[in-house]
Length: 143
Length: 146
Image (cartoon, chains in turn orange, green):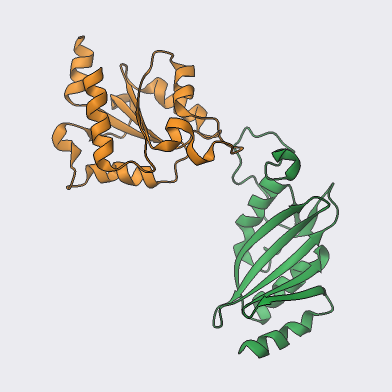
């Protein structure tokens, strides 16, 4: 295991990217940070810049307007970078699959940018905070 | 105003209205041609004291319908002004934004997705479509959905 992966797993800092979410998954992500779940005790910290982040939490379906921004954010994130797709929309476009504004699913967009990207899926509409934490733990175990 | 007085007051614009349809006790539809719609909306908003709720738009194959929904809140009475735009090639209607300021953004949205031109609108910029969306493509029209 390289030292980069080792430190990523020790304390993953996450950056939150909304690419067209309805805000429900965003609320659940914020809920993870509240005292009840308090993921900061596990070293998971929400940061304000992708350059500081080890992981991206992507919510939303991947709209036409947001796609270039998502790719820009992914390019700026320090590598190795785990991309977590939170919710049904980024995992498979969900109920918006035939919308005129939809370019997703997000895993396809990320792979266009970087074919070797590490992508983890947390489905649900929205996923519970327990599911998000479980997804993060399982993804970090798998790396 | 109680319900009877309100319905009686609506008679003041009956020369602009082509059809009146009352579906329930608290719902009335006033059909009109496009050029009369702003006048009726101004009457409902300023003279009757109705609240502007929302606009909606229907693509009905041969024409467009723009529906202005007003609510008379003391009674929970909903009045819908149904304006028919017969010209499908260049659909246009006078904006109600100068008299009903709350309609500004919904008219911009209808301009984006249905391609209806609102004359005298103060700020007809693109609202919800992506910046790189092609000009002249209207995603909620029927031909775009086929």
